[in-house]
Amino acid sequence: MARMTIQPLLIAAMVLTLLAGGFAVWAGWSWYGAAHDDSAAYAASRDKVLAAGEQAVQNLSTLDHKDLAHGLDMWQDSTTGDLHQQLADGRSEFEKQVRQAQTVTSAKVLDGAVTELDDRAGRARVMVALRITVQAPKEKPAAKDSRMLGELTRTPAGWKLSALGQAPVGNSAAN
Image (cartoon, rainbow, N blue to C red; front, side, top):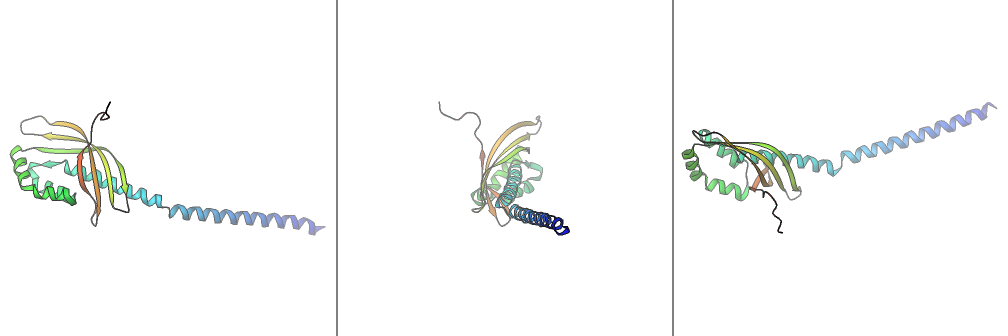
């Protein structure tokens, strides 16, 4: 009679052990899948692109005539490709213009978004909203909100702007 009461307890213990083992395998597999999921790596890449894009657009929208060499160096350090070459080629003429105007331009990033990311090809696009303030001699500072579209290219030194332009404003659809 004692044998009959032990057997159901033994069976129940074995079933619980199997369920616990099955749960452990499922939890381990789920954890491994999440840890090695491409979407986590893609999200990290997107965050890097956004940070680099916002910083580069801010750098190219900021310039102080009193520290011109440093500002223009930052412009060139933030760019690659044709944009970098255009900045390098036009640097001396632009320096003359800024020194003559004696302006101080500063930018603050209001918001930004990655609009396209091809991580494998090393190309991305961002849209960045900025508040740009220009201070000319003997004038009040003038602030303007602006939206910029930037293209980035991955380089050995990280993501850099390869193109930059003004985003269209308003309704551009034909009626």
